Length: 336
Image 1 (cartoon, rainbow, N blue to C red):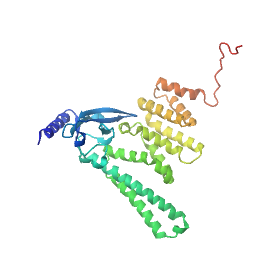
Image 2 (spheres, rainbow, N blue to C red):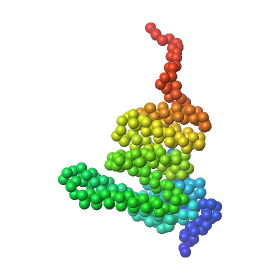
Image 3 (cartoon, helix red, strand yellow):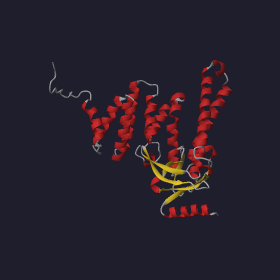
């Protein structure tokens, strides 16, 4: 064992003794550059550790239990390489650069090996599934092809096989692991565009899955997916191709489902409400903005931040059926 490897191993032992874990890497092309490890907290990211790569391209980054979740490593080009931050993962990486995942190898770290495998396999399955969906529509609707029942059956069989293969991968994960929670959520968030365009029959099921998601779950706040999950949830409803009345009703149902868990955590309730309120207003979804405002303001079991309460209060004051406030004219109204 050379001196560099000994020092990295020694550092790993020290950090383990102090409740920290280490990510080691060998990237000759990054020698003398700084690499940084970043984690997620709610809507934001935060710095965990950074180190200068030695002359041989080796580095070691550390993180603590409080950082467990998802994170990313980046060098000078700021191209992130996503990693699972898990206790006793013993993650080891080798490659050319972090920004070129095709050159990168995960040498050890069971959660990251599984994550890396799924990150390659799932998009490939999705791409092929979309192609089969396209062919399926042709063979179902075009008289030139719809008579070929054998081919239609083969297409349907292959579509089911691909879905089953993806499902089995997720089902075989350790149910107690962070990855078993993270991958289905990431898959849901990334699939909304495809569902809205090519698999409209899956829209109700996808919306129902979003509603089952616990927006107060600590795992969501360490995933880097909080913003994407909220935006994808409401984007899918808005772009479902239904009437504006239907969209408004469905968004209000989703808001109610989110609030059920959030009301037990004031900090997260304020955080999510502030972001969601702004999102709805930016999209001109004022009926749902009003529903959210009244829902939160009428909740007696928690306290709303003063600045947020002022924004929400305007909807309660201007609610249909309320008496309009007096208009007070002060000073010179008409001038020469």
